[in-house]
Image (cartoon, rainbow, N blue to C red; front, side, top):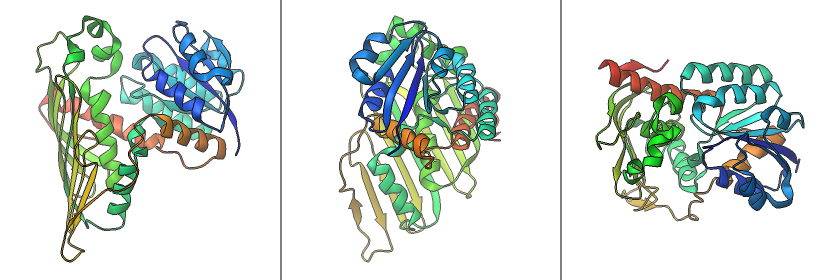
Length: 342
């Protein structure tokens, strides 16, 4: 298998950095890793996780790209990410970027055009696409088991506890000007991407509400409720919020002309499906291996795509459309009018 050098460009507040280091350490196609972090805060973690694969640690992002890495992994504050991604693309690197990597969809759209011009992959970190249950659910839908899609219901709910921490209040995650948004942008976007991926359809219009219901001093929303219209003619609803004391509640249910399918990644049955194409109809449950919830499958898939020019796990256009959907919901909440996702 072709091997390549990967550059990790990060800074203070880079999300999921330990998970990315672990994924690179476990990827057979990664020959070496260069890490650049102006804050210097990730050096110890990089050395511990990457061991001999770490060939250089520095503080200059541009210096790391001189080594001509085959792929660059970028995780940093969303406000500061676009120029770093641009620099990596201009250095002819494929890019895996932690979402959202922008605070305006227009900034990411510019990067998508550059990636297309350079014939490089630009992939947002939608790791849930690589879950075994998601892969199985997509195959069931593609095979026609539930027929024509009629509608869907989504919710992803996390904890309020993190929002009560004064350190969180000061972080970039709690400031929309630095993060692009709150729960919907950080967690809800995963479910937005998944439902489009599962159904091979795009969200084309949204209406909804977003705001702070938990009373914390935040500059982001902790709650959002959306109505969705898809290009296949179907409709959906979504709840995205920080409501629990700990843990997650999550659910994706899709109804069709021949049955229904349900994913519950955080507790409950991981995947269930019922199809009237079977006589009698019965609920079938997922019996495959447990989901790998780490970022390793995502990292490995992106490395493989970058090394072999194979299909990426998510395209730049798909990444952009998920972002545009979230920003359209914010506009709908602010204006009180439904918004097209253009």
